[in-house]
Length: 113
Length: 113
Image (tube, rainbow over all chains, first blue to last red; front, side):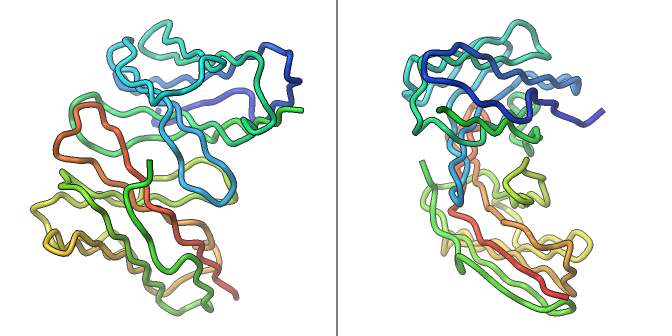
């Protein structure tokens, strides 16, 4: 199984809502990532988890809260988002420390209204 | 943050033609990777070239790396309509410990039948 599965595929939420994005992989990868991608732009790194510990937070606003419950799951909790947070949110995983390729999920298309 | 530039920003070719796109980067790298993205969905890893390699092939793909010029090129030979996508280069810095990919701006390729 070489897939990274993200749910939901699409999400529309109001600025006062709380929602969560989910990501799952069963490749035994111990590094997992959240990226944000705006239209016609490259992905921008938000968070890196390594061995279930938050290793990098790229100065992301606190309305985005990541969580890594176990080595296969990665969540991104969303609260009080702004319309400018509308984007494609991509999860990825890779073998920690090996400097190899990353495997990406299909993304969640988030619209904040 | 974006690592560097890709050119061209957009490329339109006919089936059967070759497509070449270039990537420049700024830091010292461990490896450089190319990814494809269809219609704003997930990224698919295409090929990885390490800093001590100069050229690599995978099927119809040929990648070159010139570390003295901090640049790479991706050649797609005998293009097909299914190659229509955005292509991103991404680098892993030599100082990286977390698999933090730095993406280029991307090249949007359209292959017409």
